[in-house]
Image 1 (cartoon, rainbow, N blue to C red):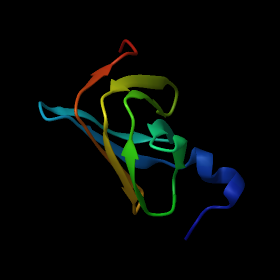
Image 2: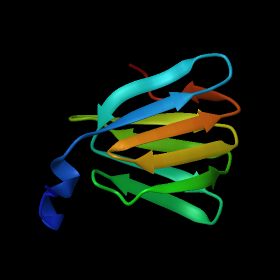
Image 3: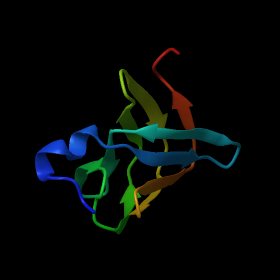
Image 4: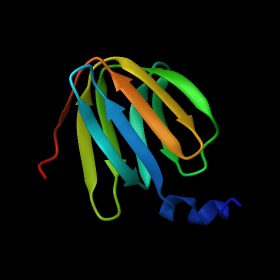
Length: 97
């Protein structure tokens, strides 16, 4: 069952980010923003299914209490069933642990 619209930002969903070298992220998040091919995209829990190309740039995600920024190369993102999977040419964590 879906949560009321005003409570979706509080729900968690899974984010996985992969580069050819390694798995960069596998965690539960509240929201994600990234550079899509046609502009910035934002994803919350229960987002509609989609596949999109990603431009090189910053991907930001919110865990329960902190924001984390990644620098990503070009790639693709798929969102479905409360799972966002990102495949990027390259990536590194910009936010210190």
